[in-house]
Image (cartoon, rainbow, N blue to C red; front, side, top):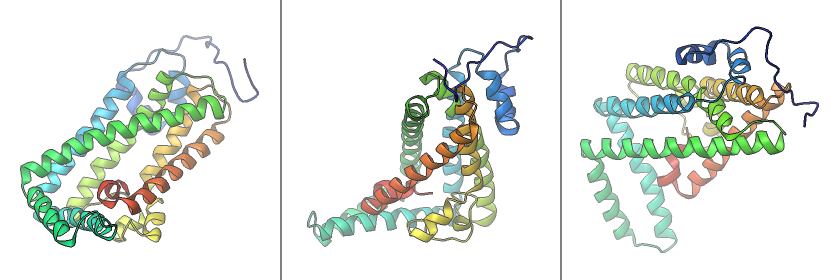
Length: 271
């Protein structure tokens, strides 16, 4: 049943030609509204979310390996990890879960393990793979439920995966730019935002808030909103874009809170 906000796509007078994956990559970066207005007429393809997600995972893993080859950046990453683990162990000591001696011993053992290049790269690669997959399916499910039942859109989960998947190419572009800029600046960049560029601590509230002013993150979630509006046949794109940005901010505030509770687990997710 149609509502004021939901449009049933009508077949155009001239048949729309199916798009190649390269066309979709160009379209999601340059003309997302036009791209998803066309994609709604075609059956969904698994490659529209598998390929960009795979590309993002590869960029993430390769970036880590590149950073590990730079002694200065490697040391910075180890210190960040040590700080997060120290905070976690301090909380456990305060709560009586372990003694200070046990905490220091465990910290030394863990840092010795991460000093091994092979082990650090292996754990980083596994962590990136798990976190990327978890992030994609969790955020896609939340977006689908919101679009379908809150915003009353007309679409299915496969369309939601396409709407979330193709914009990932924006994050792939971001990852490539960040690793190049990071190598030039001699540090790990987590985003193009005031907090990251001025070395603010993202685990503090001011640093976290300024890190939300991230060019690529805002671009990504705006395009996600456009994609869901078109794939779920809505004529109110603005509503979907605002909802997309709000969900992102709420999700990040939750991660920020969890990072305060368990910094060793969630601390590195604040970026």
